[in-house]
Image 1 (cartoon, rainbow, N blue to C red):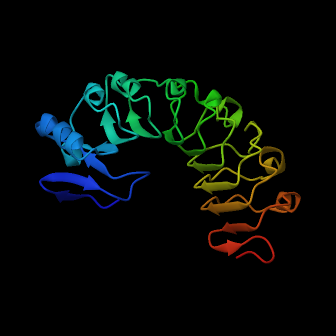
Image 2 (cartoon, rainbow, N blue to C red):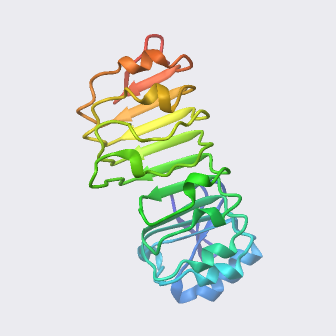
Length: 235
């Protein structure tokens, strides 16, 4: 995600759905004015790029935004997010109050560092893509994971369960990525979860050695583990 100054303001052009302007707290009003002038579709913020807000209230001044990306932040309030009725791409982590995903009717992409107090994602029918990070419940089971029903792609990163048991059925899921899930030892639940899966990518999940379940996925055309093809004829 290259970030460069353009006309005195920070911008990135390869994050998510739209170019985004960086929010610098020392120049907050100027950043909002520039975002308005250039009709920026997204905003981002990080302490090393001058973001020091404890709330997102300023978002109410940019109700047209479709994308937000704030990382390594510490927020006391996220109420400003709820003024973005057209929000399509969400990423705010890791230290924030719990979120109600049901209040974003247009949401499509969620980058979610797991917060068990968040709610509403399991009923968010508009969401098509979720990148899940750091799902590590004490139960080491996916039973408490709330995923939206119409997912087309899912990424699971740094999760601690040993199987995929507990993940809801996702009949529209076409792509699944699994990274650094070092306890994962079985894919047996995959045909139940994603019967129409087409692409599977796995990396750095060293206990996984049985791929027999892949034979029960009739639409699977690409499956790779650390660069090694897992199905005959994979491209």
